[in-house]
Length: 415
Image (cartoon, rainbow, N blue to C red; front, side, top):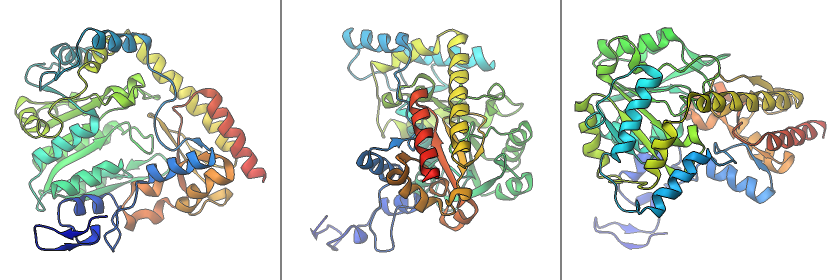
């Protein structure tokens, strides 16, 4: 706890009176109490509960297996080969080239690796750099689909923008076109799109993607897409918004290596788009982390060049894990909302007493030996009633771990 005299002339005895942008950032993330205390994120809280109780942690989205051997070996070779100092500011040239090749190979996008791509410290830094570069204070708005990945609200608040949300409606978590149209006004600076979506596992319809592009043109907004689950779509091949007619000129596309190659700790992401927009992003990004992950960048380049079979197998393997998890959750009394992509399955716990997802998720580790995250953690406080019974489970675990979690949940129901 801070104490003493601060240079603004305030006597500091608590965080609540410390000035600075941290306040609106913490408030944007829903972590700031009226007294000024900062709560831990729900992920930290639930992970701590899982560790304390010995629960299987299906809350936080990280795999429990290493990525492909070719990628790991490339990292080892880079470390032993001396690639341990600062890489170039935009990224290692071979990775920039590999990203351009990947986007051409899978989506037909043509990129200039020297002007239209920047490597970042994961997708989160790319999102932060994009919003901080493009948003200019409280007159600007950032539109997101709700529920949303928690960093979106924090970064929007740090930028000073107003966050406007468009609800994703049950049962398939698609937005209502009229509600989307109402949310995007001339004050909208950025439409931030996560597709495939965390936490719901939804994949946006073609109609909604096309509407996003139309609205961006009508209101002179920039589209920023978070596509970290691009290779983990189950029901149809992923469609980047940048591939739609008239979209590329005002779209920044973000992805990362962590989810595709099961190397979430490496924090290698990237952002691409028109050179003018990328220059704006780089002008901010270079003062956030400057550069990152020197020996991991050539390893990710190797991963992006793996055969098509690797990417197909990754999606099919994860889909099988989701199906295994769904069977276990259904047997335990949950109503499962099947995902179309990504790491997570959402289930309704109302039928087994989970009408308050917050309380249910905090009790689950001790009572059932399994940890999960309430979907209410991904919505604004005033909208939580619409998601009270919904809980998010991670399927990116070994099948035997999912099977054991299912057994524990079934026992919890019997108990």
